Structures are given as C-alpha cells and as structure tokens.
Length: 212
Image 1 (tube, rainbow, N blue to C red):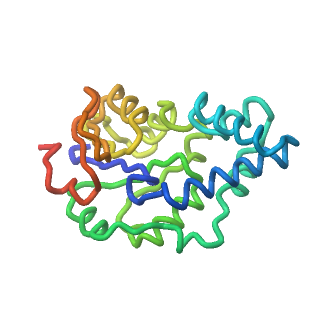
Image 2: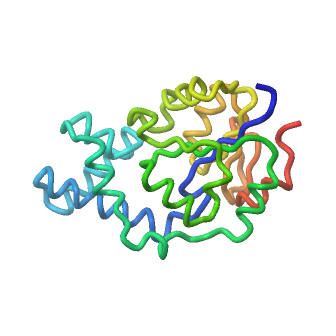
C-alpha cells in the first residue's frame, strides 16, 4: 500500500459525546448491572466504573467475571430512542474529512449498530471505506492491540502509512507503539511524546501537515 489511511475514533473525535451520549450509556450500564447482578444502584455504579478503569470497558469486566453475553449487553446499553436529538453535529466536519487525501476508516469501541447510526446522523457514513467496532475486535477494546492487528490483516494495511485520530491518549499510545502516526483531538496545551499532532477538532486537521 502506498497511500495513507486515516483511522478515526468515533465518540469525542467525530462528534461530542460528553453532554448526552456518555451519560445515557453510563446510566444504561448501571441499570444493566442492577438488573442482571441484583445490585443496588450505588453498588452497580461503582462496579461499572471499576470495570471501566481496570479493563478499559465495563463489558470486559462483565464478560470476565459474570459470563455476560456481549451482544445482549451492547444492545441493552446502547439503545437510543432519541439518538438523533442527542448527537451534537460538528459544523464543517464533512468538508474537513473530504479535504483529507487517502482512505478513511472508523475504529471504535462502540457496537456496530450504534456507530453506523451516529455516522448516518452526522451525514458522513459514505466518506468511510470501512467501519470497525467492538464486535470486529472480538470484544477486546482499545487500547488492546488485538483489534488493531485484525484491521491491519483485514485491509492489508501497513501501520507506517496509517494516521490514528483519537481523543483517548491510551489508544494513541498503542497506535504509536505499532508504528502509526498519531493525532490527539484535544484542546490541551501539552503533547505527550507518542502524539505527533494535537488539534482541537477534526476541522483543524486539514490545515496541518502530518504526512508528506
């Protein structure tokens, strides 16, 4: 492969999930733990947070310690009757993505049905050559390198020609260790050594040069 490929995270990278999406998911996961583990609300919320901090995803802890079926968990915790009203659109996003030369793929820890729905609402689904979700990583979320390797093999990609665009530093650290270029979507004034570029939003990406 001679051309570049842009690998984008979804939540808090292509759209702002903090105000509406993440609180809804957290409430849904806590409720799931209440219902399926028989826990009080406070205990379920603490356990959800503990699993997220320890394994990078609440689902991982549920599978490891409780034999939870991932498909069932993801369907119940990523049910959004009002999703279109919850997604915060980024003005100029489509134009910014179209201005980037090379292939583009999405690589998210979210389930596929949710990722596709969000991309459709944002009006950018057609701009991506592929969408990889937690199902494609066999439920091993970033920053685990397993999902990265599956994408490399599936699409015949050379990590040295990939640019990872993410809001989560742990995921960028893995990408850098695998030989990818890294872009941190953040308003931070600091830049870790494993981050090649920091931008406040995708709209600023086309104005900066990361790849010759």
